[in-house]
Figure 1 (spheres, rainbow, N blue to C red):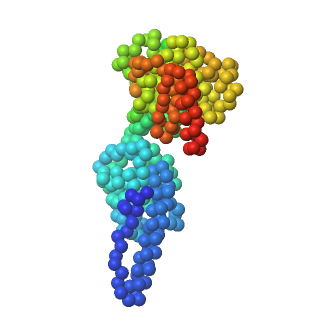
Figure 2 (cartoon, rainbow, N blue to C red; figure 1 turned 45 degrees about the horizontal axis):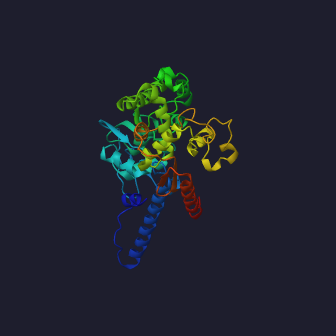
Figure 3 (cartoon, rainbow, N blue to C red; figure 1 turned 90 degrees about the horizontal axis):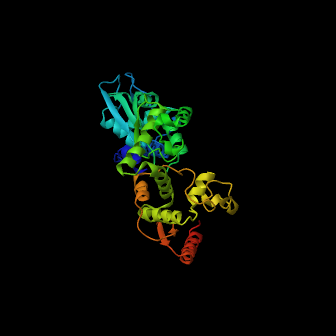
Length: 379
């Protein structure tokens, strides 16, 4: 991470002549190497980007309780001033975090924050969210507040296509909610506003978006908001009640099967197959049902009539949606692109190039094209 080196490397002073100058130059280079090693360790730390062993950083405390860093980073003595709110976004690096706090006046320097972060054993557990801090804090106290409290809300992003199990796991890992609380809310579908047509299955109804979750909210509150977003989207599109479960199910397949520019065409393939009572035969359905990638599913499993998600055997839509679709997939399911296609093959997984046809022989040609590409690219 070059930004770590840019922000935290010391400024070099030109060497002076003579033996003493050479000695000073060697000491300066040793200090520079120490800083470079520290920065490399910090960059390697992952998550928020800071991690270091205690023996890689020399930190002493001044009499006022602040940190004095070997390359001159300033630190506040405390105890802090005015209240300030700082949002730590998802995916923030340690450099991002340090400079957010510096800009807000919470810490005196990014270097002080780096040193304090490296020394705190719980620093890697800091999560994205909105925090209540104060200006003029010693860096160590700022880190401790981020680790131990001060959060006003959690910011959680649910990607399109996440299954309900993935949604619940993310909520449990990134908010105050426990998996037991979330499972209990799912087990009471009426409490979260799940429509009756969903048959008690939350799959497909947890709308993918970014949510602000307050510590005061319950699992029922949060999941209810997600279901409510799905209902609002269906209302906006004017989808009648009797079609909503099938639209959500089709959209969930489209979300998993179709590159963005082909959603409407894949939606039409689904509609055309359903219209002639032809099995959908889509790997994403089988993979969801068995809980493993399609390339790990055996030929016998694909053809096993005892598996309810065996899409090459059973006709019609799968028993439930296979994930939680976003707006674009729902729109495609509600309004497919006109066409007579019955088959499609993504012939290049890197570019997403996909071919469509109504002819089975041409489909076989496309399939061989994909197989050649896969062999050449190690798939």
